[in-house]
Length: 356
DNA sequence: TCTGGGGTCCTAGGACCC
DNA sequence: TCTGGGGTCCTAGGACCC
Image 1: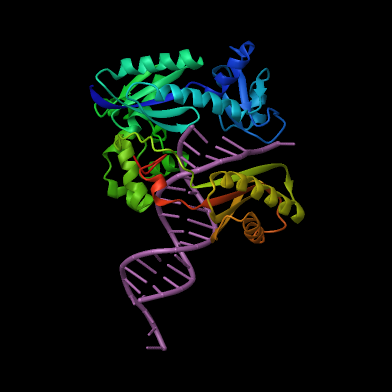
Image 2: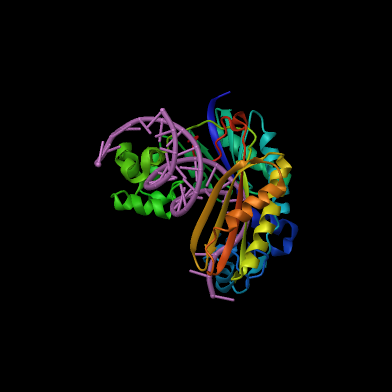
């Protein structure tokens, strides 16, 4: 049987790899996937192949900039259906492994809980099974907590295996900047630096209460725990249920007319309601997010009386729309519908933070 | 010609109640 | 006339992840 381990499985350059699989002539070329594949449009990079990354292109970068950096890049549109299908095949392989408990984190990654006396061997077998079934390569992090397994994967890339436990955590991570931690981004790493904490070993050594004034009663202690790599080691395969659904659109040209905004709200409501209706659950709240050109964002939120009636939701959304500040060009409009959630349907399920 | 689209969770501050 | 605290709910705004 062996001891319990957390494995974190992450497909290598997943989206680009799926595109290359169905178009083998792209192998070895700089491939960039983003938006509708048109670098003259407002869009960002979803994934770049390793060949494109060598030019400094990464996900989240404006497609326009990426195209400029790699003049001979092959730029492809995002094809969600294809990635969903490939993802499903990979997750199916993971679930078929002996004794595996699988918690899906996204299209291209999952935690796998196993009992094994040789987790490296288990990981290698898993990689082999995924490759044989899907022709996709993955990297595997092995850890004694979710956080350590997740971070370990970065050292296993590409196509490798790496183990990170309480034993070697500080040796491996101690001198690295806090932004290398899962859950610390640019803002938080900067605020930590202002407190004199720049590397992981410093965060690991800090008294959790010291961080409370800056980050609050939950996040403060949580960042301290993150620095130590501690936290949950329980992989949870409870089926995921969304809290809500949302749609956003970025307009290729900023909206300036009220009628355009009304039209956009109607379209977003229709799209969101399709997702909500598919789950057969009522709506209890609406949020409208407006980004004015170029980058200021305002949100308007309302609780609404529980309803599953599309006309009612539309009326409430148009009511909220009345709050939008007029006479400023609008670049992005987003609408989110919160849905009711039977308490037990998410019991124990912790997709991102609270389970750590 | 700068900055997607789908999510989750946390915090601060005001309103309101007792 | 001036003004307690504690608790909860709601709204707005952030931060982060894939």
